[in-house]
Length: 367
Image 1 (cartoon, helix red, strand yellow):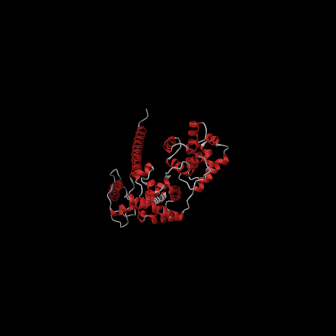
Image 2 (cartoon, helix red, strand yellow):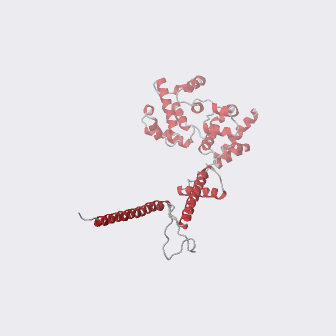
Image 3 (tube, helix red, strand yellow):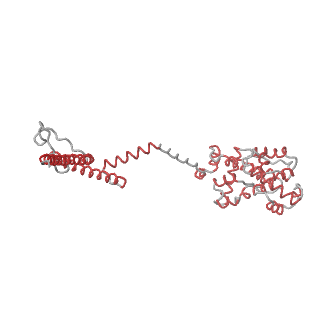
């Protein structure tokens, strides 16, 4: 952007912002140190909140030294009206420490009489100060020309494309003091600070966007975008539902004839069961055939009961053969019957011999 265009842009900013905000002039009765402490409260905050926090410090603490020795938590509790009270409390505490260690007092009124250059260098080296607080003090108490810029004001200049990312990181807006005259510096600084504080508090406010777009219509493309909410993660399925889904999936694989790895053991088990069933069926057939021939497992024919037809000629159904266990139990019974028959034959033979011997003794002649 050319220098003339930049100057015209700053002039337009002043004209538009003045319609929506009123300039705030620094109180003349404040001392140099009070201006510096107020600037620490005003950074990244609205004027109303800064005035409230600064007034609370004077009421809660007896003097500046008591503020200096207080903890940051105590100071932040007193300045709760600020958007970031701990940051402001840290700046104030460090400034008071630096001034007291340098001067052994809290009086900076002699800085008004000295040259502005050395005073600015001394302020920049002072612990706790920032670019904003030093520029505000130069403008409000030291009769210099320097427009204070904090994070909110720099954000507005970035949206208006009046500062690059590198310039924003350095906290500088080139040509700003040349484009805005010293006579209008305090008014312009207070107006742009109010716009920056409102933008920092709510960058998506329709009113703030309307003001900025009225300055530059192309700024609508450079506004920050709202972050899209993350999609909610689906609730985990109940355990029984997951089991049912797995069962339905496995049944679907079976219907489709899926030959995947999980179905393989099931198929092998079914094949083994079929083989064992076929083997048992063959054994039953063999046993049924033997029973039909009237033979036991030892090969002898059984005596058919009188008055009944054999299983070969009758049309009655052949009784199912007993299992292997029943055959094992039947074998000892057949053996016991044969043994009983042999024992009875032996007894009859012994009885015959005994009777023959008795008859022979009876026929012997007496001596």
